Length: 138
Image 1 (cartoon, rainbow, N blue to C red):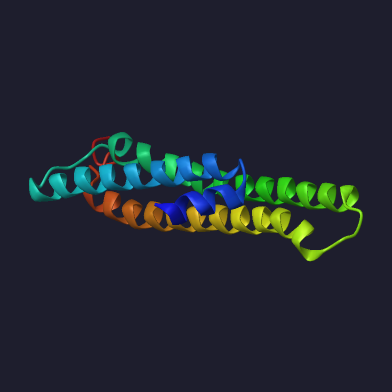
Image 2: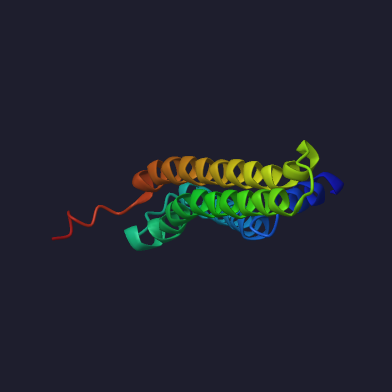
């Protein structure tokens, strides 16, 4: 738990919404896995709306997470340049905290995006096999 808190502090304020998105991704993925597993076990067909509504949220998170990560990059660079402008002499330690913030948030945002996109795709394939063929009804 100390490692998570250290990472969150090093990444700055933008890490908290990114962490919230990561938690949301895992909650949504677990919910879909349980729903799809139960439908598979009971040989049920799902409507497209029921099967895909959560997957669109995963796609949205996959789009938002890198943008939030880049926002953290910008705020980290602002911090680094502010520290440089206020320093009497420029040392690496003065700049390092802003660069840490920039790099951590970028990496974290990209990791969340990849996780959300992969699960959305895999769960989408599973949803395809569980959906009622609504075109056959017409």
